[in-house]
Length: 159
Image 1 (cartoon, rainbow, N blue to C red):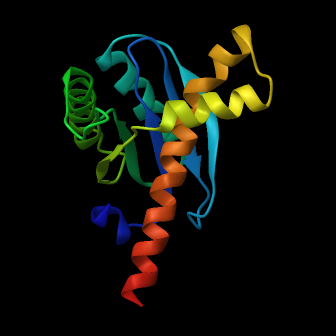
Image 2 (image 1 turned 180 degrees about the horizontal axis):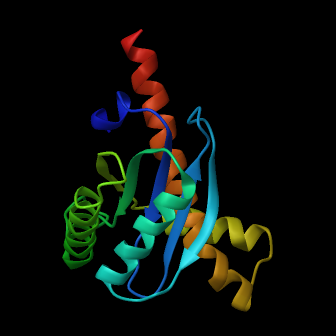
Image 3 (image 1 turned 180 degrees about the vertical axis):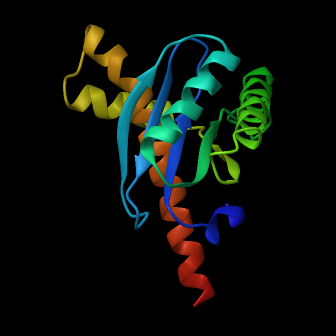
């Protein structure tokens, strides 16, 4: 998170999944996270390529927050390794994109994100196909909002 403190611009939140990847973006002041949808192109390389295109469409992005699926005991398993590999592929694509400024990619523990998203969708009685179409976006939004709140707390401690 420290690497995002000295950057400017919106942040992009990513909830990477094999089938669907949820995306969220912050406002320029980094107070609020908003879901911008999901992509389901499949495969790490194609998903990373599509995210680079979205970064171009979004304009100034100061950094990326990718959810890290950590086990409940804090250890990292195959899913976390998979997310780290995706982050590496995305980082390589971004570093080769001459029209996009360098930006940090940060991994953030997403342990409870899907559970929080599911609880919210239960409370709003979102079911069936609609639920499937929004849960990844909502998860990305929660991951990014968590990052924004942490950055705000870190900034407050520095003052």
